Amino acid sequence: MAILHNNMVRLVPIERAHIEGIYEAAHDERIWAHTTMNLMTKEAVENYVDSTIEKRQAGTAFTFVIIEEVTEKVIGTTTLFDIDHVHKRLEIGFTWLTPACWGTAINTNCKYLLLTYCFEQLAMNRVQLKTDNKNLRSQQAIERIGAKKEGILRNHMVRKDGTLRHTHLYSITKEEWPQVKQHFQQNLL
Image 1 (cartoon, rainbow, N blue to C red):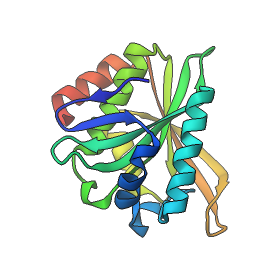
Image 2: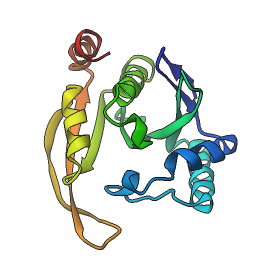
Image 3: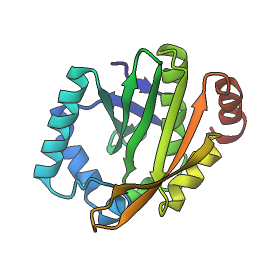
Image 4: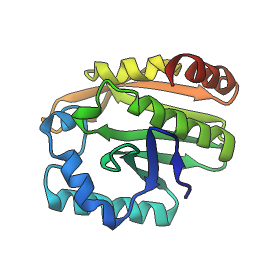
């Protein structure tokens, strides 16, 4: 698995050596408000890291640790998953950032690196992203990068609190990638 980087962030394949950094970055309840996971304890982080390494070894998902270039600190993770090599599609998701990085260009840079890798190295036909209908920040971020909203998956998941989640589904296709890439380069990076 490649290391992806630019002058703002470095995306590194997750390893057990990242447990402490992930725990420090993840220790804020606000991060987990719209997710199905919660990395507030060291044990949860250890289980998460072990699980993601197993999935990488099986070839079903690839999780990256997000490292801020300036500070060299772990500030989150992001994952390529639901990888279909026959139809050449996958999903980017399970992305979280420590709140100090919210509203910065960090997530935009991560998505640019991941999308470039997906379309230009892995030769994917389609990359999709999904988010909770209540997570307006994520919806706005996905729309800002140029992903097309395809619809809403109703009653798609059960949240941690037992309520039903509707999931907004977005995608970018290989035909759209050149225009999306240009939008990134001219307006977002």
